[in-house]
Length: 79
Image 1 (cartoon, rainbow, N blue to C red):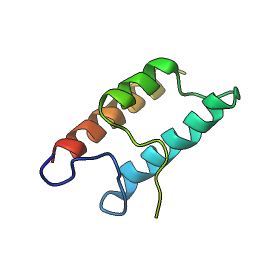
Image 2 (cartoon, rainbow, N blue to C red; image 1 turned 180 degrees about the horizontal axis):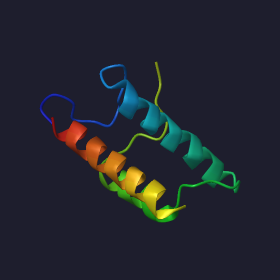
Image 3 (cartoon, rainbow, N blue to C red; image 1 turned 90 degrees about the vertical axis):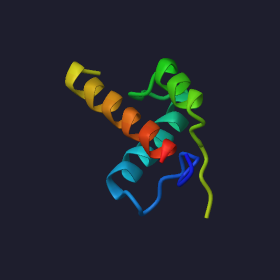
Image 4 (tube, rainbow, N blue to C red; image 1 turned 30 degrees about the horizontal axis):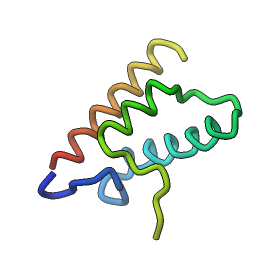
């Protein structure tokens, strides 16, 4: 958290930044009532770590990837 302190992932980690961008996109779909892979549970998990939904300037394997990325984001925030 000393280094980052937030969930605004930019070019410092392009892979994680891309994943974060997708979460924001799916959140917008969720709010609009469109079909999306993000669930209220995932939204709540991201909210619990201070995820920023608006940034300015399915299957078990996919769920495992999602959980892995969420854990990476938690670690990123702590750094």
